[in-house]
Image 1: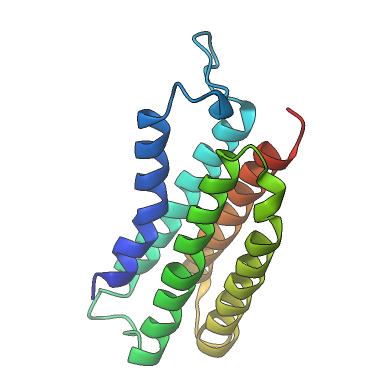
Image 2 (image 1 turned 45 degrees about the horizontal axis):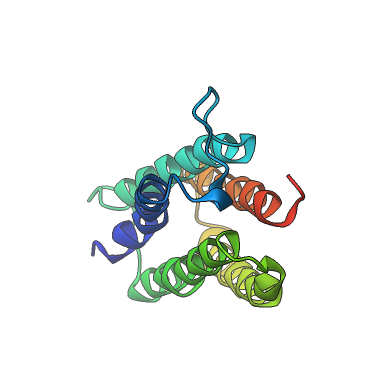
Amino acid sequence: MYRSLVLLLVPAVLFVSLLWTHRYAPALRVSADFPFFPWQFWVMGIAGTIATIGGVLDWRFHRDPLRLQLSAKEREAEAAALGLGGVPMFVLMWLAMNSQRPHLYLVPIVVVLIYTVVLICYDEFVFHQRRCGPQETRYHRMLVFGNGVAWLAWFHFIFSAG
C-alpha cells in the first residue's frame, strides 16, 4: 500500500542526503557564496518539489474511500515506473555526475529513460486516459512534468561544460 509512496520519495530524499554528504565534492560545484549551488540544482529543487507534491497528492487522492481505488495491476504499473525506472535512473545520474567520464553513462541513462517513459505512458494511457477527472489529471501533470524538468536540469548539469 505504501510502496508507491516510498518509491516516490526515494529520489528526493537520496538526492538531498547525498548532496549534503558530498557537498565538498568538486563535481557538485557547490560554492560558499550565494546562490551556493549551480542554477540546475535550483531548477531541480523547484521542479522536483512540484513533482513530489503532485505524487503525494495523487497517492492521497486514491486513499480516499469515496474515490476510485487503484486496481492491483495499476499499482504494479506505478511501482514499476517508480522502482524500475526512477530509482535506477537516479543511481545512473548520480554516478555520471560524480564520474570523470560521464559520457560512459549516457547510453544506459537514455535506455532507462526510454523504459521509464514507456512505463509512464502505459500507466497514463491504460489506466488514466478516460477515468481521470481534472483534479487527478493535475496531480499527474505535476508529477510527470515536474520530474521531467528536474531530470532535464540534472542532465544539463552533468553533460554541459558548465
